[in-house]
Image 1 (cartoon, rainbow, N blue to C red):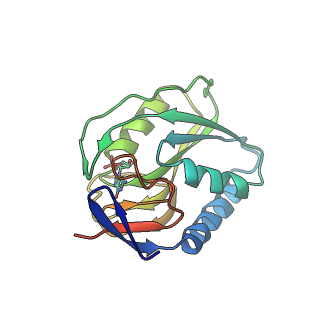
Image 2: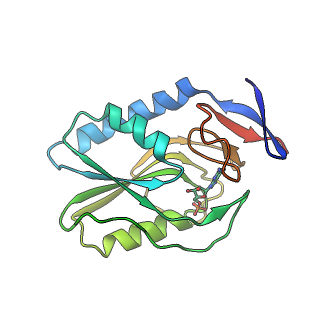
Image 3: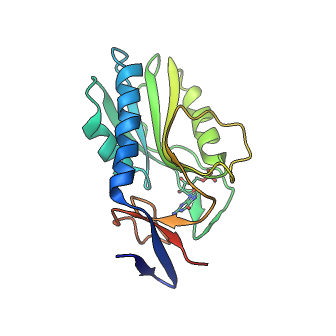
Length: 178
Ligand code: 5GP
């Protein structure tokens, strides 16, 4: 499937599954090395990062836990810029090593705000693992510890990422046709 139609837009295949999984392999390898013995708590930021979190967890060989949180600040093809609170973190993260799992860092606003909120809960260390990063869109100074791959500043769907709720189930990533 080289082109898909989702609602009113067309998208072209841009990153096949094999390439995505190779990137996840590399992130997992680094986390396994860096965080061995640290008993990290992986925090999956829903909805978009569920597929990345699943593939990553299967590749982690160290003792670790996972928790799921939500913060919704995006709709359609433009970031609203609104900052939302973390919902659903019931676990005590005081003095723990925490790794936030993100689908994509675009402007960087979401991850900066999320890290700030998590830091206020007193963890020993907060790290960020993002599947995708748009360096040309990100004007802020963000500290990303693990990046699956850098991508151009175009709107994408698939591998957990949606267009108005659809397309999350695509195993490959597709880029909007302008
Ligand atoms: P940021 O705050 O870094 O600008 O945006 C982060 C959030 O915007 C991501 O978690 C994701 O939900 C959404 N986002 C950013 N770029 C894209 C994109 O190309 N496609 C989709 N589907 N969502 C995106």
